[in-house]
Image (cartoon, rainbow, N blue to C red):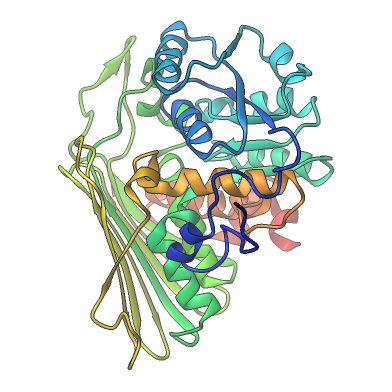
Amino acid sequence: MTTSASPLEGCSAERVAALSSENPFRSSQRKPRLLIVGAGMMGREHLRVSQLLGWADLQGIVDPDEGSLEWACSDWRLLTDAPLTIYRDLNEACLSKAVDAIVIATPNHTHRDVLRVAAASHKPILLEKPMATTLSDAMDIVNLARDYPAVMQLGMQYRFKAQYVDALETVAAQRALGQVKTVAMSEYRPPFLDKVDQWNKFNRNSGGTLIEKCCHYFDLINVFAQSRPKRVYASGGRAVNFLDFEWKGELSDIDDHAMVIIDYDNGVRASFTLNMFCKELYEELVVVGERGRLVASEQASFQPDTPSQAELLVEVPEHPAYRGVPVGYPEWIETSGHYGATFFGHIAFNLQLVGQSVDAATPEQALWALIVASAAQHSIQIEREVHVDAFCQEHGIGAFFDA
């Protein structure tokens, strides 16, 4: 059974209704075969989602860490009896004729170098967020993507979370709020989870908390603002988490909270709040326009068997969500990872493989999110506002900002 509607159009409920048991755009052809580079936590999420969606076949994985490979293979055996190739060499894996497309989910600081190896294949690539840890590395990726002969999608999956899909539909497509004036986002959550060699506890590997954790949110804020960031001010630091944490003789330096203010060229003002020493997870987006206020919120948990609860409230006269309505995806989608966002991120990638235009993050959009995050990290360090144009000039990407 197929449907003429796209599973990436409309509100979250309409997107679910448009799903079919197999990819309608590939029904007469064999499925594309994926390689996952990086078998850590995010790589295993991509493994699960690709198998659940069923629009592509997972051909193989590659990772230098034996523990991660063993864990990924264990996950795979719980899902299917299908064979899975374990590659030991990245270049061999990417160039293999058995691989049609590549998903990169390695630690942040490896993204540029891994991408360069993968790009030699000229195959479609899904690169996880953040695109890089420095603006210069990110600019290298943008320049590579401009002449790249295949799809290069950035893993800003939060564009596909149900409450943000519905918020974007309300604000952008329906223009229910009129002209947007302010945007505020917040995340309250537990500390960073354990990763291989604890790479996410150190700024040199992650790029900093606002880059590693928050580029998703800055991407969303940029989309709602529909303008270029002009000025960023941030305050934050280390209050509770990992204050005495040491790995192989090195002390952790990762921040655990921050507050960020962003001014945009078109007059929109935005803010972001992060706190990473809470017991449960709560996210909130508040967009205020000429006609009223929208609130998209989610209460979730890292505890097992605790489903998320998301709500959309639109305080515009006669709007059906004026008093708030529940939103979300079916449990079988939400439990696949990141509450369904990665599932629809894979749909976007598969649709791009067959030439359909989708609203997935481009390298240029990912760089704008990284610019905001990097400017905010820098603002925390220097304890004053950062003018984005001058900041970009100082980091060698002034031409991108001026373009």
